[in-house]
Amino acid sequence: MPLSPYSGGSCMTIDELFRRLQTMGNEVRRRHNTKAGAPANQFGVKLGDLRTIAKELKTNHPLGLELWQTGNLEAQLVATLIMKPQALSARELDQLTRSTTCTQVADWLNAYVVPQHPEQEPLRKQWMQAKDRWAARAGWNLTASRVKTDPATLDLPALLDRIDQELPGALPEVQWTMNNTLAAIGIHHPKLRERVVAIGERIGLYQDWPTSKGCTPPYVPVWVAEMVKRQG
Image 1 (cartoon, rainbow, N blue to C red):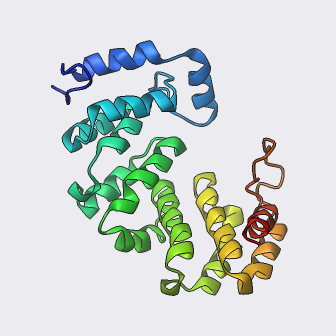
Image 2: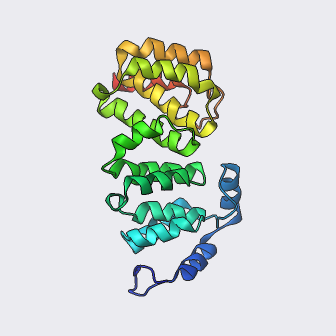
């Protein structure tokens, strides 16, 4: 099956694309991906190289869907960059979200496809009630963004009640974006900041997270304090 033209004006088949990805992969990257929870179906290609390939392929929605169906890590990442979100029905996007294979793919889908979809708000509400880990991760990711951009549509105290109750026992994939929502409330809503910090301290999630010098840790009390300091 033909792919979109890339630089040089020639075309690739999916097999040819996969052979190219294989030559770009390396064992160090594969080990890193595996440690981060990536599936065995991968080549170990650097993310920057995948972005380069996506730029060559340009927007190609049918191809993006085909690449996603392979289940290959790199193919799915490239797919998120060349899909056309508006060409997906809400049902199709829900199915894509639930078929995610790992957090890296989920984060690219949630960054490049989900926010551009015209039905993102109905989907957000649906996903906020989902038991599926990837749907719930997407729902909380959208909610964290809405806390910053459109908080009037949210019941923030009720969100804090839910986070306080559910965060400790949530699946790791869901904890991450739920924690992001907690931090966003503390950073952008001063009246709720004290409660946010108290919840973060009591739960203690990511308190011992290894953080490189100059980076802000995901532990909410420290995260909120650092971001508020920068705002000042």
